[in-house]
Image (tube, one colour):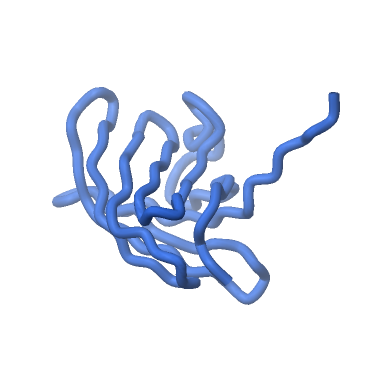
Length: 108
């Protein structure tokens, strides 16, 4: 199974319950070309070094409340199909999370 695709971040145990979805629904995305992006709370980032496997390490650059930040992270698909990972800010916070495959409604 591959981490590629869009994942909805459903748990961030180190933050208050409503923080992850403060600006938009929290997510992480891994594109087919190895790039990606994520957003949670006031943090957004561009991912470099994603992969096609069930466990990926990556680097990222982005913004936290309009301040430029960068770091690294990792994700791994769990036996239940969820995605467990961590987004780390250089010299700062580590954001642990659990995500599930993003499902969109096609109802009209």
